[in-house]
Image (spheres, rainbow, N blue to C red):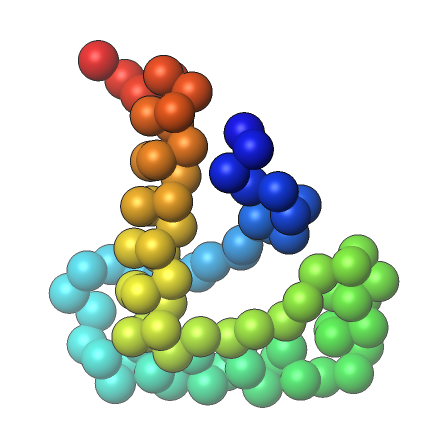
Length: 85
């Protein structure tokens, strides 16, 4: 997979999602709570000890990220000929 020369391309993301028709006000409130918790020093320290980066995306940013990841990894699967038939 020479296309992905940098190991950072293989980083994992942990995502929390809500059902599709969750009111946007609820989604934003949940995001605000996650953001608040992720800023707590003890939580941040534990996460950073693993070498992970903390990035709390808003719903629009998360949708763009997920779409980009799907495109990227679909291409990798095609190159490796591993897509389901």
